Length: 442
Picture 1 (spheres, rainbow, N blue to C red):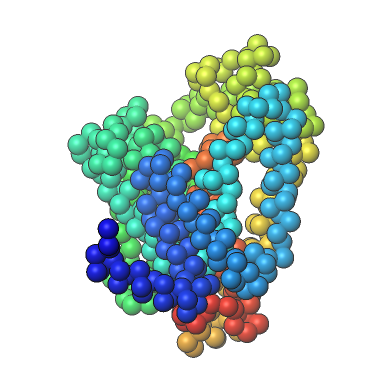
Picture 2: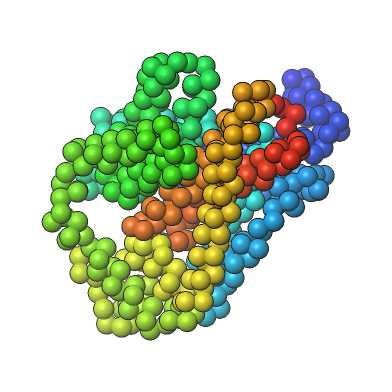
């Protein structure tokens, strides 16, 4: 059956673009698929299952034609990813149940592990960063509106989920949506710099508040203390990166975030509530499991089985609890000292590598002068910095958050890390000349 003329026309134009520049064609497919996955990230489990492998197909095709100019080929600290892989391998091979740990680790291959490599290739210019920031803003806006709808009607408008234990869940179906909102909002906050390019301070602040009011509503409604802590920490880290007037403004932002949440959710911040939190018992169980398997760990997803084998039980949580609610303790009990050290080299290695380059660029007078010209260097580094802060926010969120292999949570962190890596690698190349793919301009 012949195709309609409009489809034939579309296919012909796509073939012509591919034949003219295959690398650019596959990069466009990669970028817009990733952009859409980021903008619609919380829409459902199936979406997060399918889009990364589709992006990966486009990534392989892009590498086939443009490997020499790819970010991964120019990334000098790529062995940090080897450390992460070695940590996971230890958590499987030395597990108390190898098959169970293998299955648990395997769930992340198509939904998280490939995402930093996808994301890093999606940054070639300031325009790419601008678009990715707006993708995060869009995700925060529609998910925040979903939370407002859920508060009003009793059900979210995507999946029909009701609030859980009196706390909003959005389309994620659980109040852990607060952690999602926090980690998505941090890079989205960079839209402030994009608004300031068009508007004065007052109108920019009004638009910024309008865009993020639904997101803050859902963050408050989910009542996620660890999410609030991550957002507040991002402003502190921004103050440390920039200093000066911007740093002081960021510290005021920290006070507003923490103070506002404390006033609106005092029962969650009450000292007696914090002291009676079940996490302290879960941390104790995780430590005791680690002490039984100190060098190579008990294995991935073995927390529950191992503390039960020791005859232990959580003081306040259900006996079925699967993780210790602390990412670092989760890494320690599952991988032991050896795997934990490898994992921390991965996590903190990128903190150090990206942080020193971002901070230098934000303080470099030469970069600031070039920003007044058409290069847009300062804007480029500011946008990159807020994706870096998204990575740091995840590390803070992990103190009280999930287990390391919580797939949607790890996936979001890998997206921020990948975008930050792409921004740093191409930003450094720009300081030396002109990175590949910057013909789009600023």
